[in-house]
Image (cartoon, rainbow, N blue to C red; front, side, top):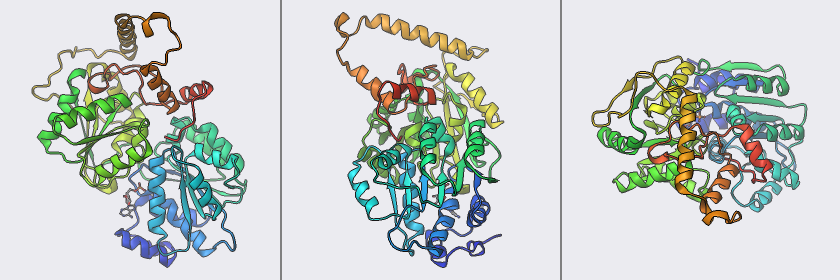
Length: 472
Ligand code: AMP
C-alpha cells in the first residue's frame, strides 16, 4: 500500500497531513496527486467524501511551496466551487494542510460584505477559493486579478453546471491565462462535463475512483412507502425508533425545510433548517450545532447541503425524492464517507414512484421498498402513476388551490407585494427552479411550489427577470 511519503510531497505538508490523522492516501489522492504534481490537466470523477479536496490541494501547496512567489503575491491557484459551504470547507482544509508553510489563502463568496474580501485580496493571496458570482464581481471591481495563475480547479463541476453557472465559468475562463493547468472534479461524467473538458482542458489525464454514477459502496439504502401527509410523523418515528442522533434530512423546498424542522423541534427532536433564504450567519450556526451534536437533525435543501462535510454522518433521509436522479447520488454521498458505513432512507409517496424507478436505473441497483407498521399508505395502486400523470394531477391540484383561494390581494390590486410573491422572487434569486412536477409534495413540503432542483434555464430566466446573482 502506498504511503503519503511515497508521493514526493513537501515535508511540511506531510507533517500537517499526519497531524490530521490520515494514515494512507485515499484512492483518488493516490491517483490524482502524481498527475497534478507533474503538471498535467486532470479530469477526475470523484464524489464528495472520497478525499478529493486533498487530492488537488496537497499538490497545489507543494508546487507553491517549492516555487514560492517573490515579492507581492498574486493568485497562483484558483479553486471554483458551487456553494459557500463547500468553499469555506475547502479553505479550512487549505489552512490545515498549509499550517507549516508560508502560503496565504482566502475564500470569497456572496451573501457577505465584499469590502473585507477586497482588503484581504490587496494584501496578496496565493490560493483563492471562490464561488463564481462573487469572483466575477471582484474581478469587475478590479479587486482581484487571476490572469497570472498557474492552476485552475473546477470543483464539483457537475454541480456548478446544475446550478446554472456555465456562463459565469466561461467568463472566468476568459480571465485566466491560456497557459495554465486545469483540474476538473465531478461526481458524474455527463455529456456536458465531457463537453466542458474538451473545450477547456488540454490533453487531460482521466482518473476515476468510483464507477460512473454509482453510490458510495458502504451506504445501506432503503425506501419506505407512505402517504405524503404522513412523512413528518414517519421521519419522527424512524429517528426515535432507531435512536439516531445525527440525521441530515433533504427536503425539496425551503418552506418545507422550515416546516419540518419546526415540527420535529416541537416533537422533541432538536432540529435546524438550512437553505438559501437563511443568512450566512444562520447557516453557519445551524451547521455548527449539527456538527457539535447540539442539534440532532439538520433539514436542508439540496443547494444548501451541497458539499457539507460532516465526518461519520450516519443517516441521511430523503424526505422527498429528488426529481433529478443524479441529486440522489449527491445526497446520499453525505453518508458512508471515507469508507464508513451509513444509512440512506427515502420516504416515497405514491406520486414519487416514478422518481424512485429513475434513481434505481441510474445507480443500477434496486432499493428495498419497505412498509413501516402504522404508516401504511392509504393509496398505493398496483400500477405506479407515470410522470405525466403526476404532473397533470399536480397542475390540477394547484388550479384547484388557486380557485379555492380566490383572487389575490382583494381582487384587482396587482402591485401589492404579497408575502407569497416576495418568497417567490427570493426563490428565483437563489437559483430555485419552477420545475414543479410536484412529485413529493406532501408533509412538510406539501403544496409548496418552489422546489430547489435548479436547472440552468430557470436560473437564466431568473437573471433575465433581474434577480440578483447568488452563489448557493
Ligand atoms: P472530501 O472528499 O475531500 O470532502 O473529504 C472527505 C473527508 O475525508 C474529509 O473529512 C477529509 O478530512 C477526510 N480525508 C481526506 N483524505 C483522507 C485520508 N487520506 N485519510 C483519512 N481521511 C481523509
